[in-house]
Image (cartoon, rainbow over all chains, first blue to last red; front, side, top):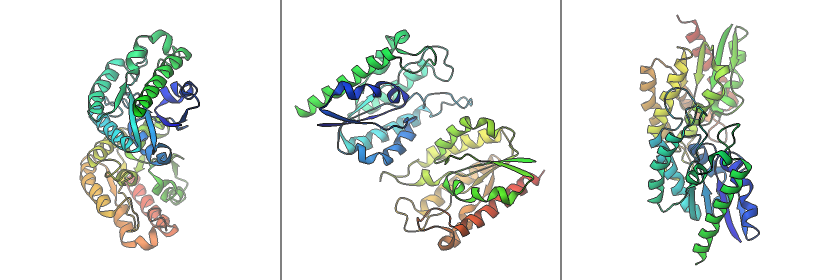
Length: 189
Length: 185
């Protein structure tokens, strides 16, 4: 039995996280918090409370970014400025590597035009800043941004411009499950 | 009727915040979130979530620091000082746009038995932040200095939260600082 943990914001909580456990099947035990992991430092703090569920994992798959790169306070500064985002994400990665045999980061997914608080140019900049830093630490990257961007109209809800549709959940869950399965196979190899 | 807002972690939520409304009396309407404001960036997001309640405040009293200074993972403080300062100054700027009467209460000390925090670190965060906040016009309520000489009486057996006596003392000082700020021109 492989021990898997999923951490992430609502793209996981009410998105791919709903389908990944059934896609992985009976040979995988998947734990994920009921809580929305929101932003990077909120996830970091959560890792203290969830430690028991994280230690000894074969694979931890995680995403954070939509809350961090949003402009929610109207003061011209992103909720988590990009340099601090990278710093906290690397700290999360370092701690997760101590908990799990393998760690995968899923890039922050795009939004539909007109959301207001988020825009894809900023998300691309945040992804571009964090991905090389995480790769240098040995974190595997699951590029959900690219997967979703190629299917925006079908995969992102028109009502809220940010969350995954049923098609988007199916598409992202399949990618996440494949990445986890492949990582486990490599660990066994 | 003066509108007062209290923001802060459990030192407020299950501490002085329990007594301040009654100490201020009927001429003050006190709003405070039911939620624990936890760490600096958690409070920062709260400023968006609670924007309606914050609007029109005559005075905002706030504390953050115990969650930020504690070492949860054995790799140093939960929030590095640099991020703490930047976030706290950002909070102060946003609060000062609501009212010129913003009060920051310094982070309170813990007892020596607290294994994931210590007063040298807390004092260091306070000492570096306070001059920056003062220069922005924020009023300082030095709860650290009030509690520190009375640790045995003011701090509970959990080594961090205020005892009944600590709540009474801190609430009295918070209410007095708020009253003075509101009554000043």
